[in-house]
Every structure is written in C-alpha cells, then in structure tokens.
Amino acid sequence: MKKVSVIINCKNGEKYLTHCVESVLSQTYINFEIIFFDNCSQDKTRNLIKNYKDKRIKYFFSKKSLSLYKARNKAIKKATGQLVAFLDIDDWWDKNYLQSRLKVFENKKFDYFYSNVNLHYQIRNKNIAYRNKNLPKGKIYKYLAQDYFIIISGLIVRKKLFYKEGFFNSKFNIIGDYDFVMRISQIYFAHAINKPLVFYRVHEKNYSRINSKLFYSEYKNWYEFQKKKNDKNFLLYKSLFKKFLLKLEILHNIKNNQKNFNLLKKIFNYPELFFKIKFLIAFILPSNFIKKFSK
Image (cartoon, rainbow, N blue to C red; front, side, top):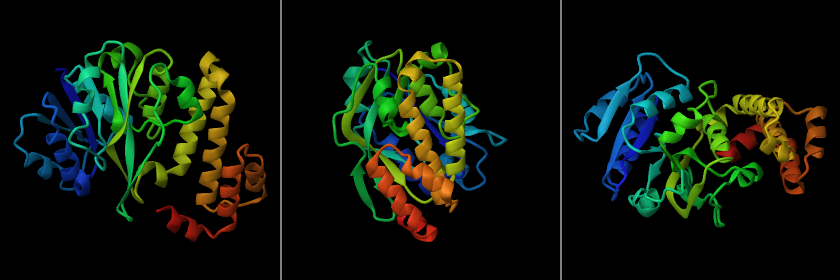
C-alpha cells in the first residue's frame, strides 16, 4: 500500500479546519500522513490543529506569509509518501476517496490521478456534480485545453514528478496548479475517477472569485509565455486558450462594473452563442444583482 502525503495548506482557516482534517483522518485508506502547512495564520488555526494528538499529522508553521504556491512547494518538500494529494482547507473528502484509488496507485502506467467533485454551494447547502460525463484518462492535454476540469482538492501526483518536471510556479497565486497540470498532461498518463468523492466548497470568499483581476492577469501572463516559447501543443489549441482568456476578461469587467462600449464589442465577438447571451444579460443587469446572484 503506497503512502499518501496529504497536503493541507492553510491561512486563517479556523472556520473550516475541523471538517477538512477529520475528513482525512476518517479515510478507510490507512497509509497516509497529513502535511499541515500553516501559512502565518493569525487566528486559532495553530490551537485547533495542536489539539489533535494523531501522529499522522505533521504541523509546519511559516513565520512570514508566503505566496500560495511557494507554500505548497514547501509543503511538498516535507512529504515522505510516494504520492502527494492536495486538499484545500475549505474542502473535504468522502471517507472512501483514497481507498477508491488503491489498485491504480500500484499501476505504474498512471503518473497522476484526478477526481470528479461535488460543488457544495454553501448558502443553498446543495451539492452538484462538477461533471456529468466520463472523464478522460491517459494523455489529456487536448481535453484540458478544451475545458479545464481538474480541481486541486481532487488531484494526486506521484511525488517524483515534482522533482523531474519542476514544482509549482511560485509566481502564481491562483493558476499554479493549472500551469503544473498542463505541463505534465503533455507527457504523463492520468487516471480519472468519475464518482465525485471530493467536496469543493463554493462560497463568497473563494480566492479566485474575489480576485478576478488577478485570475485574468495570471492567465494572460501564462498565455503570453506559452505563445512566446512556441510550445507545439499550445499552438495546436491556441484558439481555445485565447477564448478562455477573453472569457476571464469579460467576467472580470462585468463583475467590477467596467461596462462600456469596448466590453460590449468583446461580448459580441465571443465565439459561443450560449455564453454570449449570458454575458449580455449580465451586462444589462445591475452589478449588485450579479454579485448577489453569483453567491
């Protein structure tokens, strides 16, 4: 049975800590450790995690606040398992999440593993499966280019990949896992679990939702870098990446009430009719209504 190092990065996560940690401790898969990396929390995080006397929990504290992916990289380097799994502090796992991978962990054909997830809408207390179709296995770059569907709390990677292909780009605060997965998906084989045994909490303080400008900026930097280095796979699907970049720009401008003729032009130029209509409706509606509805 392979040892799994479960990386939980936390910064002021006292509200969700107990639910998250106990979802790992209750796993039916027994060979794991928790690498709990406290990124300079100023709340009760330290006290809450110290109350656990389970030797599988290894607590690390950063005296200064680090960028998210720099903190993730430091946590990975503390891992002693052959496999590295990620779980954000506001998310949680079904008790059979790791056990569902027992056989494929031993299959050397697969280098990383991902799962369908349940989107848990906190205000409505409702779960909705993120994907309702079979997820692809193998080299999945082309599928991710069309529609990126991997959430980090459902991602498990053989630790050796980080040392062979490089760690997360620590310059990113939102798309570091996207960048890493897009890199490895060109070369390595993925295994997918269709059953949603991961719960991703959707709430008003999701980092990417409240930092739409940063999301757009980071993705634009990623896009320009791929274009500059003439990555052959990127160039093959360049139009898809460009479409997503435009989508992020439109969403950011609508959310931040930057509604003008230039934005309207971009909406009309968006290539998909379904989203074009949604963007036009959002353009017309008051921004306060949009923010309230998006929760």
